[in-house]
Length: 85
Image 1 (cartoon, one colour):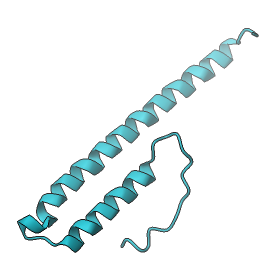
Image 2 (cartoon, one colour; image 1 turned 60 degrees about the horizontal axis):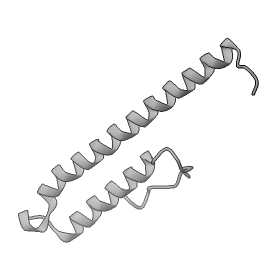
Image 3 (cartoon, rainbow, N blue to C red; image 1 turned 135 degrees about the vertical axis):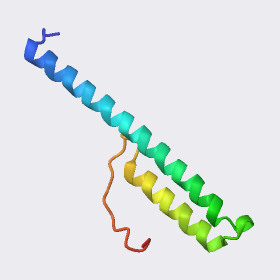
Image 4 (cartoon, rainbow, N blue to C red; image 1 turned 90 degrees about the vertical axis):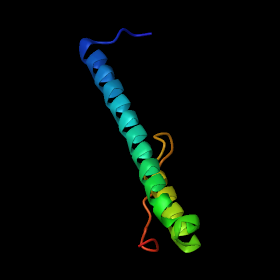
């Protein structure tokens, strides 16, 4: 195995730090989506005066947001969310 130059080592460290930062941002985004869903579900749930339709719409938006944030492992294909809003 060839020995890495100082520049190559620095590039690898920077890439690793960048990927860890992106992972942490994804984790925070998923937590924020779940927190917002829980808060809105309390308001929109049929047992608290909301409707089934409202809950279905909320779940659809939550699932779409999770898909947009992704897991960092799969390629994301941009698609239109026009039918949601």
